Amino acid sequence: MSSKLSAALTRDAKVQALANLASEPPSDSMNRLFFAARNLAIDSLLRGLEVELLRQGFPAECAWHEASAGAPRLELCMRNLATDSWEKGTCTVHLTRSSEKAPSFLSDCVYEAATLAASEYWRGKQPAKLLAFREAVQELWDSGELARRVFEVNYPFQYPSHSVF
Image (cartoon, one colour):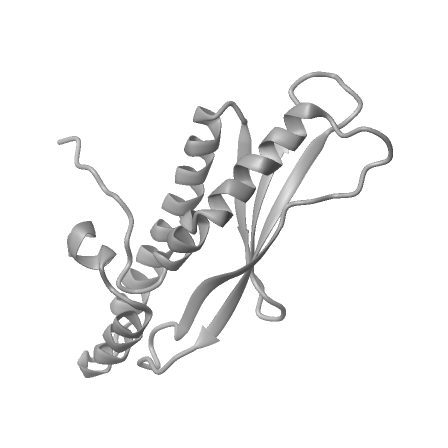
């Protein structure tokens, strides 16, 4: 599916596409393909955010944290490359994980961005570079770009792929 076609899908359309997979015969290979595609979509989200922030001058590291208990989260962390007094600053996107109707051999999870925690408490004056990083992440959140990108990790997966062959 091309990214132009899948970019126009709404939440209901994605949930329906997931439910439509029920007509496929359960198989181990389908399960492996599904989770490989989801992992690629998550990896694409993380790398895309890192590249965008790096282009703005912030050497960020992004990570997707998920466990069976508790809500998943997306962390955007900028480490201080200099030897100043601070080590890193972190912004966290809290995600919701809902269960929708899906075949038993696939994940029924649907992820959506819920809230952004872009502030930490510091004693004294906060470094300008750290404030600028937080403002850049807040701008991504306010524009809806973070929520849109998180939503793209749901089936049908939306991640840009380019062949070099």
